[in-house]
Image 1 (cartoon, rainbow, N blue to C red):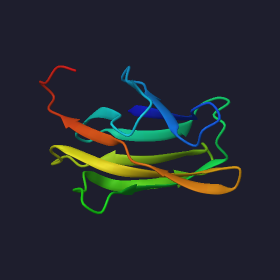
Image 2: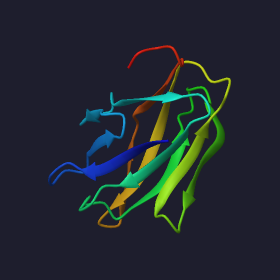
Image 3: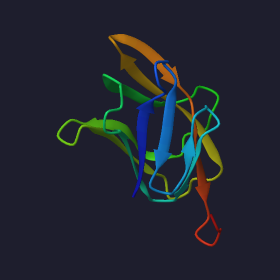
Length: 119
């Protein structure tokens, strides 16, 4: 399982993302390496400055690498999805979120790694 934590950048509406794979990013070029069949979790970081994640969706011009599309897990206060066993390449996706009641969009990527590829 890979978990992507989401946090607001200072007083802006931009995001900082970091994951359990050791990646950190402050822009939309943030990319999390994932494996086929792996569960991906998106969660607000402690003191994130964000009201809520309101959606995780595939970008219109990107392939779908999910076998189970991201949905909200209300009991764990996170979003979860599964990477397809036949997935290849990268997928740009959108994180929809609210800050002070206003909706915003951020579009990082997931990159499918082969089991024999190094990080």
